[in-house]
Amino acid sequence: MRITGRQLDVLRRRLATQRLTSSPLGDPAEVVGLLTCVQSQERDHAFYSLGLRTRRASYASVRAAHDTGAFLRTHILRPTWHFVRPEDLRWILALTSARIESTMRARHAQLGLDGDTVLGAAIDALGDMLRGRNAMTRSEIGEEFLRQGGRIAAGEQLGHLLMIAELRGVICSGPIKGVHHSYVLVDEVIEPAPELDPDDALVRLVRRFFAGHGPASVRDFARWSSLTMTATKAALVEIGDDLEAVEIEGTSLWFDPATAARRSLRAASAFLLPAYDEAVLTYPHLNFPAADGHPSAEHPDPFWTWIVYDHVNVGLWKRTVGKDVVTVETRIATSLGEEGRTAVQGAAEHLARFLGHDLDYREG
Image 1: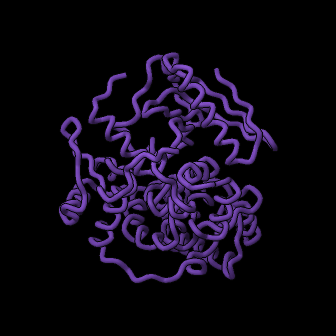
Image 2: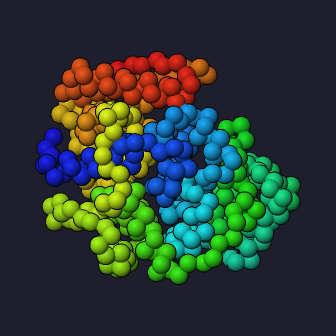
Image 3: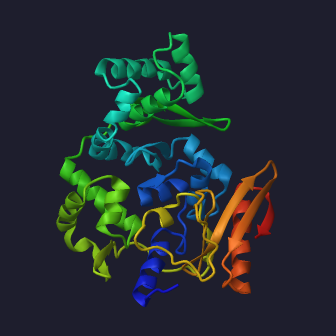
């Protein structure tokens, strides 16, 4: 493990910017607003990502905020799930969705959804099913299409249709039904909003990204947003001195100096970061260095995710949630001392409290 003092400063600021080590925010919707879009294909892991950054959060409180529409879960930015605030959905989709959908044309054709008539008719039928805030799960929608003559097949064709309807701003998440995601019509749950000029929208998105994720590079933003590095650089010129940068090995990492970057005295020193957490996923080129003796897997499993202690990746963890008990398995770097191991177990206890479960902690 080798890291310079300047790199360490960057990692420290990121943890504080994302409210992992600075004062937590008041509710999960505030966290979504800070980060703008939060990757969430593993929904319950993503709920814990919000919980780590929220004061006195529990799984029940985060789910309740989602189910009442304080934040949404939908396909946005990239062809995967994200959380987003309702007031941010329309302008971000207007800026990014056409570019995303253009990369999926071959998949449209493979699934028989390439004709405007076929796709348009299916989206119209979907709108009829959901009208009147009739929240339906994917399975329920598939059954209704089957009842109507099977114009859309369950499985990949239906999944792709739902993704396109989300990217076009027709549908978004409704309340969770049991354990299943549901869909509602955007126009029935989100107030209309004036359209933004595309250049203004780009500047807004760039500013928001670096305020919530900085210090980060132009390449980090381009990967996160699916937009081009050229457009990003032009937006940075427009933003001017509102953002600052630190140079690391010839790369500028931008951040908003007004964003909280002070470590709280009450902050934890160890974190079990959930699958696809923004603190890990956002920065493929400069991230938490692995401790000596790290138990790296030859074939990484996305459900064995990072343990961070004192700005270092010290191991991997995985959870199994039962009715009343959550089992947390850890693989710890051989170089981690007793104090660090105690902090990691404390992080597992935090997860158990969030879930309202007893903890079965296992160190492998």
